[in-house]
Length: 255
Image (tube, rainbow, N blue to C red; front, side):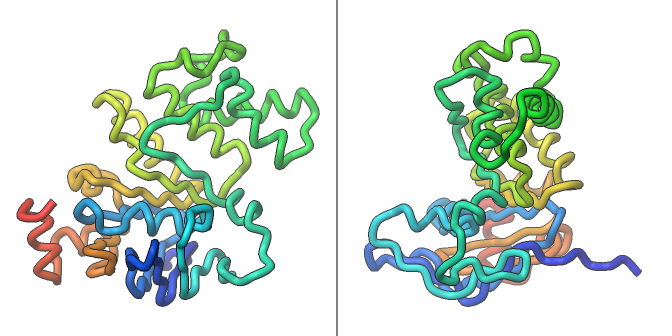
């Protein structure tokens, strides 16, 4: 009998409101460790808000109210007194559009290492190389590490941002529609990369593309107007949807 994976992230009655507009309503979910979980649903249903709650990034916005429990590795990270930078270090975040820092390729990857780890020059170089190799970028950039990151293609910039996130050794990779700004070839590269990385990391992917979720997801969470209507193993959710809304979403009636 196959042992079920442990849950890396769990929420209990999570509610999020902005300026008295409730965006997430009583969210109870469990995200399994070292699998790829896709958060899907129509536009404006709260997918990105849910994703950004996991590393407490929502709190930097004005007039946000968050209640409920958000448990990571068995600890409720919403409790007062916790080290928020340490929580965020566990979570690498990849945005829709790549945002390389205005510095060299090397320094983009080394940036987090210099903040979080006291590494000597040789150890720093080795860590940067390892991170670039992990995202399949090393052979493409090894002879121009000190060129500005802005000279890379958009697809390369997205992989560089992923390398920057991996360099500080997170446990979870949060991806907010990371292929939406990429051409089909670059998008396929990133998809393959995420599938490879789930062996060592928990990957949470917000995607607006149902086909993508069907290709890559092990586990699925379906949001609809701020509520979780379905969640479970991808093959079960996609082949045997229980709610009328999920059936309509799968058939293309709502998008």
